[in-house]
Image (cartoon, rainbow, N blue to C red; front, side, top):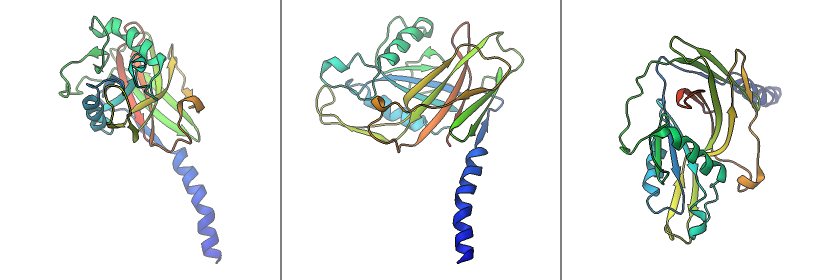
Amino acid sequence: MLKVLTALLLVPALAAAAEATCSARSGPTAPLVVELYTSEGCSSCPPADRWLSTLARRSDVVALAFHVDYWDRLGWVDRFASPEWTLRQQRVGRVSGSSFVYTPQVLVNGRDHRRWPALPHASAPAAVSLELLREGDDYLARVQPLAGAPRELSGYWAVTEDGHRTQVRSGENAGAALQHDAVVRELQSVERIADRPLRFSPRVDPERLDGPSKRPRRIQFVVVDARTGLPLQALRLDC
């Protein structure tokens, strides 16, 4: 009985220790940052959604699905859509190389990429070293510029969820059962990266969650050139 009680007491302690040591470190090359701008109301988007799902667990890719809201008025309201993501698409469009925004739109390392599902190789030498660490409910990012890094760095935290399913009842995709991975649920910008660790505490926004969130969640941090807005380094933490 004493052995059983001791084992039960050890379980929470071991879980807490595992969380405290959960970390990831970037390698010599930077992964590809793949952004998909999509909508459940867009009939040409499901193939792109399925393709992004195949990238969500690749170690050489950080996948981010931004659901825009400008399709919502055309017959089906996407529960993941946000005007914030629409504004982001318009803003990054200024440097993406595209003269207009559309869905599905894919950006690879900040550039408009119409050749998907083909992707370039993530072979660029990293200009920045990045480490992510979980401490309880908080996350830390340590950024170290390397040779060739821009003078000013900025970045952002992204919280994504996998395994969402939607039965669409109207609009262009009426009758379709859609599955979504790498859905961006929260984004927090870091305007300037200095010589100190960055701390992030994900928030729970009841308006953007359909009940208690039990979906697989991932935390990403992306370092960008503050002048151009183009990604330089990215890392995902799955714990």
